[in-house]
Image 1 (cartoon, rainbow, N blue to C red):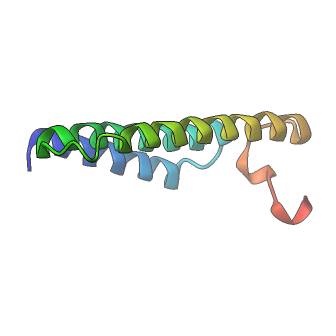
Image 2 (image 1 turned 45 degrees about the vertical axis):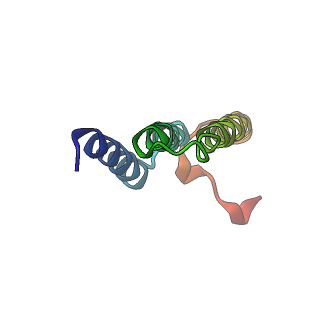
Length: 98
């Protein structure tokens, strides 16, 4: 395994661990999700260069499009929850009370 692959795997794993263990604020969960998407985007962008396949060059663009939609939806949820609940703490959010 090259150093480049190790850095992508470690950044994705650290993002997953951050999402699993730092669940106090919604903004920290969104940042962990964005760092996961960024590491996946960079890995998908480098993969066609390493394998020299032109058929998989559109996959990073679709990934970037979906991650931008995910970021916009997450920020909209952050604003809506802050307006209704007064903070972005995840323990204040309860699906049974909606």
